[in-house]
Image (tube, rainbow, N blue to C red; front, side):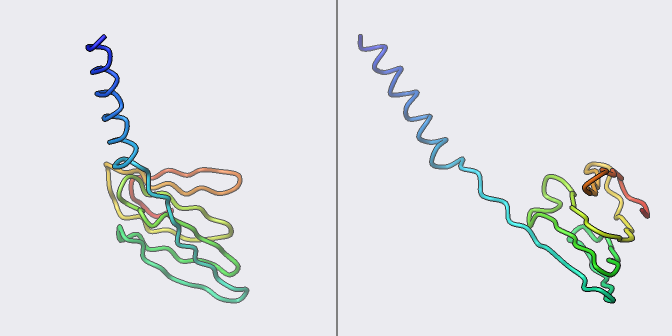
Amino acid sequence: MQPQQYSFWTWFAGYKYIDIYQKEVPVTYTELKTLDGQKKEITLPDGTNIWLNSGTTLKYANTFGQQNREVFLIGEAYFNVTRDTTKTFIVRTDNITIKSFGYKL
């Protein structure tokens, strides 16, 4: 009976370690909007330049560039994507997803 108890407590200690130290941090987002008649130029943390047209919304995770380079777009924008062959740049809209390693979109 002793080996089973030891096995349970070993499993339990490992589970608690994962439970305490490996919790996922909730992702927060930056959201940028342009009003009607307004245009805006922004630079993302990876150096990508984006020009937002009037009435456009752009959203990206505050962890942008750490694991991926993904933005969410509603409206119109011009992208000059910084080249990175290890992380695809992804633009998601309601209807389409565009992937690039770094060019003008």
